[in-house]
Image (cartoon, rainbow, N blue to C red; front, top):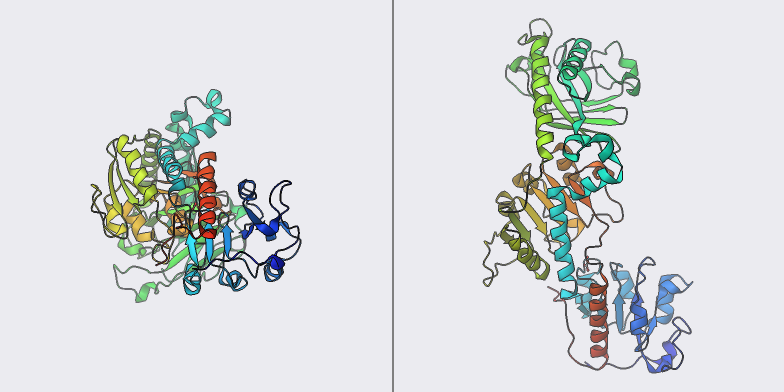
Amino acid sequence: MERNNANPQDLPMAVEVNQEGLQSNEDLHLVLVLRLPSFKLPLNDILRPHFHLIDPADSPEPACSFLSNHAQSVRALICVGYTPVTAETLNLLPSLELIVASSAGVDHIDIQECRRRGIIMTNASTSFAEDAADYAVALLIDVWRRISAADRFLHAGLWPVKGDYPLASKKQRLDVGRVLISSCDHDFIEQAITMMLMERSMKALVTILVVWLPELGGVDVDIAAHENDFQGSIEGASHPSPHAELHEASLSISSPRAKDMPSGAKTTGKIELRLGRFVAELNPIDPVQTLGPKIVPNALRDEAGLSWKVGCLSGCGPGPPGLGPNNGDDAIIDFFIGRIEKETKEDSEAQLRPNLRGKRVGIVGLGSIGFKVSKRLEAFGCSIAYNSRMEKPSVPFPYYANVLDLAAHSDALVLCCSLTEQTRHIINKDVMTALGKKGVIINVGRGGLIDEKELVQFLLRGDIGGAGLDVFENEPDVPRELFELDNVVLSPHIAISTPESFEAVHQLILTNLKAFFSNKPLQSVYQIE
Ligand SMILES: O=CC(=O)O
């Protein structure tokens, strides 16, 4: 390919001023720098002696008009960090032949448009692999051993006040939300539970919502605590309670009326209750007449991300005449206390964190980063398996052709693959379910690899064991619900941010640009599929 120097008359005046004593701009090849204003790397100092850099972010002119006015002859572009390169931008660059990406992932660049235009692309390739692998392992150890949570405990000055961390962490106060589907005497139940908790020296904040299904076709809401927080009106309630005018409940329930419902049938409705800033989502419930107390695992969460444990009891209490068993309030209290004791015990056991030896780690994407992760974790005594587009014959670890099977055979998944149309939301509800309640997810790839909304729900419900996340779907926005969870370690996309990684990628960019303008082979060409 013939590669001409830029036409001097196309060069913008004084966008990047060359250092004194160096060649004048007109003798240097023109290179466009595309970067978000927040990305300021020392890259320019390294490149400026060799190229005439133009950078719209340094110009008062709007980017589009800058590109139309000054970049028509640009043949090479450096894409800094995750700056989007869209088809619209490429349209403004008719002479473009090369994009040099400073990142390893290139999902922010319209790859198909590049292919259509015959534009070559290079990326950071292996420059970041060591640092990204170190960071993935660090996140995994942190989630498993709760290092950041322990650090927060000390930073908050809690050790001398509350005693040793494992016995005095926040989890010692169990926040319990309970939803009763019943006509039982909730005041009595709340008092009884509180007394029994005190007897057992358990600190628990018990909130009881009572949802009474007087005749199963109607839904009534009453409440035993925080009544003043509960405002609005009940939609769809056929039997408003005495406090109905204080309540806000968004109820949608598609259960047939009791008289039309065959015995043993299940309602399919989904109920969402809003209590002040708390939201309870209830799974479909069983009708009163079919069951004794039954827990439906659920989550009640507040805006600050505090996770509540909610049980949904159905079919307890005397119930309306003629309907269902009369289990009595004692049964309910026993049931509650049993659950609370169990959860408290589980929580304090959860303070003793597992080590890494013998754990099964599934690596999603066994490229340069994934492979380095595997080597590091082998040294910790973990057993490794992997999923990637194709099995790698030279690799000794078990290969799983799909992530669901890998998850079912792993204690943790470490995501190291790139984000493509094929890998978007590769970690979905089914994969998280297969990974299980103790399973951990580490992501140093891209946020879009995980269905983030689902992940948040799984974490809030305790349906997976934890997560270590360096990347998010909508950076820099991170779901607030995650902030309070001790089993989640959050990091602002910095796994690769070390001086060593940056130096390596700067040298790679310099080498590639020099090679391009002297018709030599490029390094780290990204294969567009
Ligand atoms: O996330 C880092 C990269 O893709 O370079």
